[in-house]
Length: 173
Image (cartoon, rainbow, N blue to C red):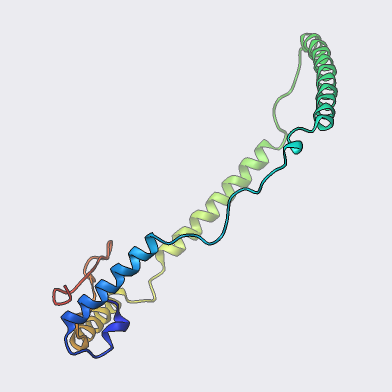
């Protein structure tokens, strides 16, 4: 039974609960047997729209042109690769290192030191909020809530900091 219906005064809670359960069951059965009033099927397509021969011919021509261009590009790439292989054998000295390598290393070292200094300052800082006082206030508020609740309030497991789990009061079940 939802909380809105609990606020309505009744003569007998048990018979009222049975009545609402029966109404809900009838409603669920009606929802399962409901029929759609909207036709969502695919619309009828005329037979003569089936194949567009002109469109297919244009696609084939386009694919043929693309294949021809790809073949030409492949031949050019083969020629370039053959020429580069010959040039690579003749060029004996190639430099593969960066001139700014030392500068980048110094900058990285400087940034790392600054980050370590910031981390140390953060870790040395004392907290501004008292979490123990927060937990004590939460326990006190839970006591107040359970004392004024008709059906029992939800209890939070305040003592366990790494995992909080909600439980129901036994009088509610």
